[in-house]
Every structure is written in C-alpha cells, then in structure tokens.
Length: 373
Ligand SMILES: Cc1cc2nc3c(=O)[nH]c(=O)nc-3n(C[C@H](O)[C@H](O)[C@H](O)COP(=O)(O)OP(=O)(O)OC[C@H]3O[C@@H](n4cnc5c(N)ncnc54)[C@H](O)[C@@H]3O)c2cc1C
Picture 1 (cartoon, rainbow, N blue to C red):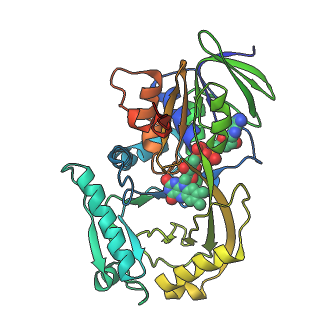
Picture 2 (spheres, helix red, strand yellow):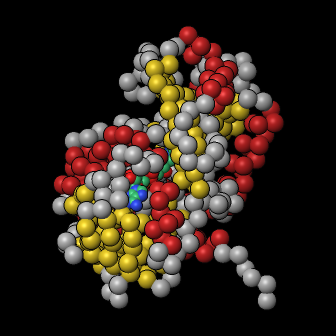
Picture 3 (cartoon, rainbow, N blue to C red):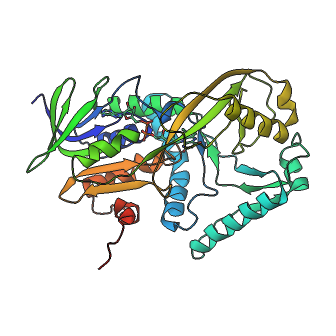
C-alpha cells in the first residue's frame, strides 16, 4: 500500500475536484484525488458554463432547491476560491433568458416554470414570461423569429475552465494530494475502509468518493452500487471576440467576458463518440442566427463536442453503497451550477457531519424497479 488517506476521490473533473476541495478545506480531511488523464471523457472541459436555475427540477423539487441553494451560494463561493487561489472564475449573476422560437414553445416553457414553482410550496421562485417586445427591452438585437422567453434573475454564468483550475489550485493549497494519469482499475471494499488499484499502485483510504463522470457506473458496481449513467452529446462553437452586445446569457448564446460568443448546444443520444457533425453544428448555428441575426457575420473560431453525464431521469445521483456506507458516488449533468454545493454541503454529507443535508431524494434507489409480489 502506498499511503493511507481519510478520503480518496476518484475523478478530477468539476464534480470530483469540487468535492475534494471541500473535503480538504472545510473538513481538513487528508484527501487524495486521482484522475485518469487527458484521453478520458471530460465534460468539465467542454461545457457551456451556465450557473442556471430556471427549468431545473420539474417534478423533482429537491433538485430545484439544491440548484437554488447552489446558485445562492455561488457569489460567496467564487469570492472564497478567488481569495484562496487568486483565480477569478468569471462568475456573474445578471439573470438569464431561455428563448422560445414560437408561441407553443413559449407556452411549454412557461408551463414548466409554473409547475416548478408550485412544487416549491410557496418558496419564492421569481421569473417573468416575456413576449417579443419584453425581450427586445433586454436584447435590442434579438431577431424577429423569436417569440419570447423566460427571464429568471437567479441565473448566472462562470468560466468552467477557470473554475476547474481554481478548484485544483484550492485543493492543493488546502493540503490535498493530486495524482494525474492514474486510472483506477478496481475498487476493493475492506472491513474498515477501501483499497483502490491503479496503474500507479494501490492506495487505501477510510472513505471513497466515486466522481469519475461516465466512469462512475463501472467503479460503483464493484462496490455493489447501481449508478446508471449514459452519455448525451452536446456540440458547441465559439466565435471571435466582439464588442459587448449581450448583457445577459441565454440558453443558446452567451457572450463571454473576453467578448466571444459561445453558441450551443445539441442534446444527442449518440453513444461515446465526441465528434462534431455538420447537421448538429448547422442546427445550432441556424438557431443562434435566428435569435441574434448579427451573428451571421461573426467568425466561428472553434467547434467541439462533449458528453453530458446523464442519469435516467436527468437528476443528480448521490448514493452510498448499501453494504459499504463509506463508499459514495456523485454524478450530475450540471457540475458548474452545483459546484458551490459540491464544495460545501456535499462534503458535509460525505463525512456524516451533524448538520449534513438530507440527500436521500438523490439516491439511486429511485431507479430500482419494484418486483411483482
Ligand atoms: C455540452 C455540455 C454543456 C454543458 N453545459 C453546462 C452548463 O452550462 N452548466 C452546468 O452546470 N453544467 C453544464 N454541463 C455539465 C457539466 O459539464 C458536467 O456536469 C460536469 O462537467 C461533470 O463533471 P464530472 O467531474 O462529473 O465529469 P467529467 O468532467 O467527465 O470528469 C470525470 C473525470 O473522471 C476521470 N475518470 C474517469 N474514469 C476514471 C478512473 N477509472 N480513474 C480515475 N479517473 C477517472 C476522468 O479523467 C475525468 O477527469 C454541460 C455538459 C456538456 C457536455
């Protein structure tokens, strides 16, 4: 055995790095973070960077509350991590808009938002349904092909690459140990603790956190856990920098602090390939130009695709192994939005702190199919 740690976290993407940072900083846990490497599938390096509340948790109020808690914690979280590391994650909370391209889509979006609000039993959940004129007040450059949109003041943005860098730097400064190019091949529960076998030798720890994105399913199965996840491909593009034209982000187009426009994104069940396609890029480009016609004259500088980590119902999974409660799994498709909770309240739950949040709604037991008597 090479070393003994309080906690081993497998997966150095946004989810694993946020958890590891929180464990090391907040709980002073001796934490080891193991990551597979550059050829791995990494959603954290390919996403759109929204810290997004609207539309989250229809039919699953625990997720709406968790998302809102994270969005509310983001301002202090971004300050804290900048103070600790000097890295600015470019966080802003100007509110955000989901655009609707026809009346039926606007109606569906508004119905979804009213459903989410009713699920919260009276908790404040502010949003406005905007017609085209309302939208033009926010976006003077919006195209006539947009019917309206939903505005939500809770929405914001961050730079996901800077965030990831900050989490790793914060983890290192809190005394954490990071080992890169270290794929975990096997998980071996022990009577007290756990051993993991890697390409760089074995490591032992008292607690194990599996946050390996799409790799979590296979590792969790070795500890007797069912963590069903599947890939969902998103294609994106980024333009050359331009003068400031969009004050608020939308789900499809946002302008970064540097001035470039991020244009997204597809949602495709296409297996593991991460190639872009002409059809996918064409579709998002057409939608972006309909939304903001001036984009037709702006040069695209890069396109890419990345894989979302999706559970069967689309909501996060935070689960403990039934026979090994010191082994947990964490997976979600909104790792930027939830980073503030993953760096604070999720570590409380992992170590079993007295005031830990109740995350039972997110257990993967919700996917167990009842067998006929
Ligand atoms: C197109 C797209 C747009 C998105 N937009 C947003 C957005 O706007 N806002 C938002 O909040 N979220 C967004 N997301 C989701 C967000 O990117 C993910 O939720 C987040 O990145 C997931 O992070 P992760 O750490 O779980 O996974 P990953 O980033 O995939 O990281 C998993 C890590 O585990 C490691 N690993 C895997 N197997 C092993 C192993 N056996 N041993 C050791 N290490 C292993 C890999 O090396 C990898 O680094 C988007 C995702 C996509 C694809």
